[in-house]
Image (cartoon, rainbow, N blue to C red; front, side, top):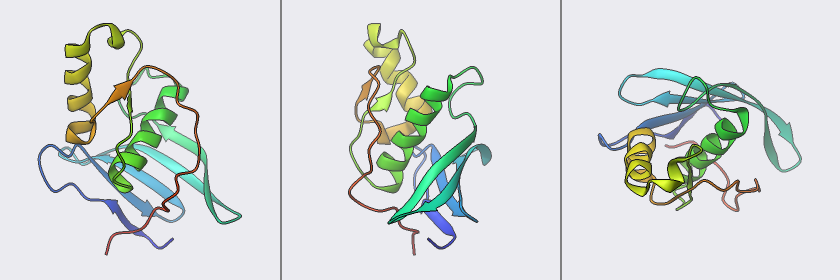
Length: 132
């Protein structure tokens, strides 16, 4: 995969920009332009695999599993354009209004649904592509 943008924010409700650069995927908060996380890639049969994640996406205290789920959500919802559940922090499932507000604050209008359940990771059918 060549270097370039995987997702460019086009409106205020897009909270993230995602880029591929030198075998890494960079997750940047779109309006502050702050780099939050870096996913390091390793080539494997038929594609690439994320082998290490540095940083956090939503909270300095988030657990590594939550970071992985949030990163997976951003790749699927933003870069691949899929409708996919956003991960919810523990306890937010009990207060739907707070959950909705948190999702919008963290993920913008790409968070169309959310869950506190752990979603098993699998390869998406569609490959990631750098935007023209």
